[in-house]
Image (cartoon, rainbow, N blue to C red; front, side, top):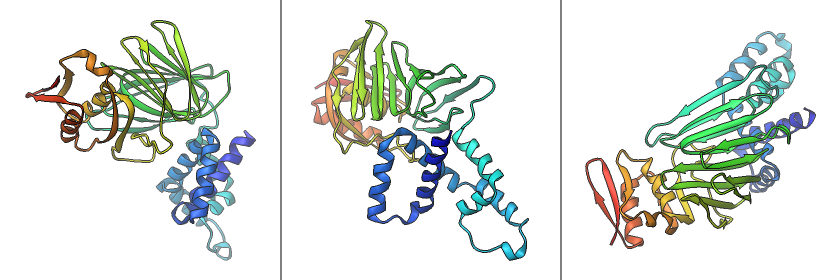
Length: 319
């Protein structure tokens, strides 16, 4: 508990300075965030707390109760420290320091080109991508997500080694204790990308598994575990937890199927392949998810493919 509060206090200091960081401070913050997934998680929640109307309103109410002589300029975090009850209430709400007394479940579903940020009751968070459906169950013994379809980026709060965070995507199961990673399940296959920390990926069809660390990815296509890819240091995940709009998709040695799945979720039409073997073709490039149809045409041109568009379907063919 003490360590988590110390991390929160440090994150709170960075959040208060977030709008006026010098170049040196930005580098110090980046180093601190990279030290542990718990740092990133606490900082994201502190930013959300810092910008919330709830904090402002509660502190204003407390300030009105002070003697006039005591009302001198103070920062939000100094006000929060002065009013311990307010501080603890909001800290518990945003960091979920205490485990729930009974099981809690969440069902998240998104539509075409829609993403959704969700705070989880264990202190973790997830960014659910477009056309995705998943359920989350949290008890004192387990934390489990069942991903029916689509993609989600997870920022997992470490509780204990005996309480892992599990994502079940049908034929693929991903297990972690604290890290940031994404799982994408589509008709073309399953993809796992690790942003921070490490994960255990198990292919439940052939009982193979692999350990992935930060900057690595793997895909399971047609029930077979692919080669582990090492992503460039400049790689940015398009489902950024701090972003509200779709980002550019950085694809590095990514299967054509995975790229098409992400583009498909931005459009009303369904994308399919005339030759199913094309889904394993490796693609590298940067693709604009805000203009999926134009991006699809450029992708096809670069890989000598042809796009045939119909009223509700788009078919990718060999040229």
